[in-house]
Amino acid sequence: KKKISKRIGAMYRCKSLLPLKYRKMFANALMLPIFDYLDTIYSKSCRSGLNDLDILYKKVAKIALDVSTRESSLVVYREMGWLPLHLRRQAHLSAYMYRILNGSCPSLFKHKFQYVSGSSRGASNGNLYIPQSNNLKDFTYIGAKHWNVVPLDLRNYSDVKMFSKVYKKRLLASIQENPNYSVDNLFSNAYKIPNVENG
Image (cartoon, helix red, strand yellow):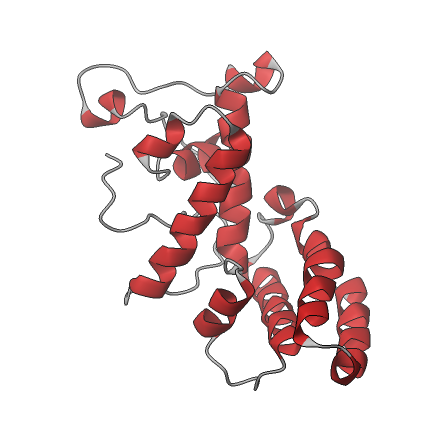
């Protein structure tokens, strides 16, 4: 958080000197990588710590757009083309799961997951078993939960880059249209796009 805060300070001081285009470039090139670094690991931090990061993330976006701190976060995210931070982590973890299940990671990772069997809807949808987890932090638990909310048609994409691009686009559109959307930084929760049947 210290590194982010320092860069936010530098960004704020020079915002009046840079046009919107370059403020966005600054935010995308120099700020987002810090939030993304090891995010599938730090996502298991306590909710209060994730909430603190969320505040900094919103601040970066609002400085880049030079809007009031009271501006709606959803408006800001739409203008920046950003997902809320918890959904950004979800998209990254889902892409990682895509790689695992499609054999782009060492086989020992894939062997940690099992598809639902039998004649249930979960089996026909290609869902994964969600194992028990006492602390809800086990990767097999979180990974399966996140994979099971991925829209069915996206699971069959042959390219992880296209998978990530389309999933991000759908998540961003969903939160703009869903009146019940709210930020949830609890690491074990996964946001499901409404009206998409995942089983």
